[in-house]
Length: 160
Image (tube, rainbow, N blue to C red):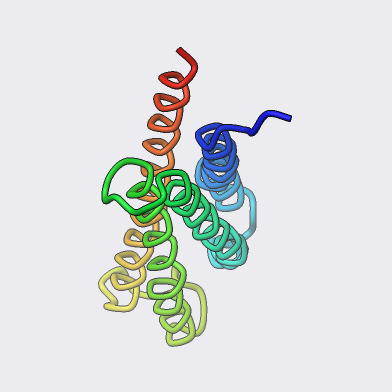
């Protein structure tokens, strides 16, 4: 039986994770904010969905990285290795550093964010943390796209 090329496995797992992350960011979250009765409820639901996306991103990045190290029999600071590292780091930062700060801030607020005055520091802090979380997820998604492109290029060069 022929061995499945590393690049093919990487394309598959990166595509699956990227699809899930994009579906959450582009379809699920906007639908929840549009349809649920309060933004607070929508934020709570999205907050419950994000950890599996971040954890699976960490696993995905680690698999890409491990496959590269095993295939090359060593570490290099380029290409798909870096895509894997960026995915792991971005998802870990969002999950372990940003998400807990958002949770603590929500506890401090104690009610709907919309009830706070527009110039309340907690509302501004929440907006800033939310933006940072989105940016880390976006960076991980960009790294996944780069990883897919690099794996596709590597796969096509070995098939020629």
